[in-house]
Image (cartoon, rainbow, N blue to C red):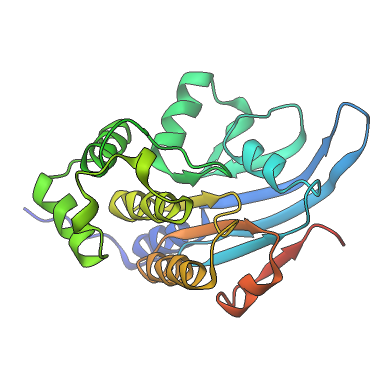
Length: 230
């Protein structure tokens, strides 16, 4: 027997899905020396949308990412991700939260002694994702990496490792993706590749927050932007 959802309830669920991704309200964070990186900083990020955070080194981009991932908690204000105020989550529940979203740190987080296939497989298992070997092979083939599938990641270039991180997140299909400097040290062609994948994930419904310090990124992603230098 099927259950019909009243129209008003269906609209509420649809609206809730669109709106309840990431909300920052009056975030203030100070360094040990008392310098405030943010003061009453507020913004929100909805489904199927992208947001760029710009700033030079030392402006607080990486600190913001660490706050959003629950790695830094000595802040005031509210950070709500997927309807959860993350400051009040236990370490176990915060770890579970991180498994549900996609994130990429400034330095590539990869298993260097594993080959490409093993790397993606372990990442998906740790994220609680079900997958088949053929699905990984298909993703690598479609993106021009099939010839590297048995190659150890320690032998790949910086750009190739960054691209693999993006492919892993695409296979995970998370509602929220948080990236710290995904365009750092990439050539123009690889920046375009990453930007194209980001656009595809947003079209599929993911919300993406990405920090950057290279002005040319704006030539590849026409997304709303927050400038931390202002």
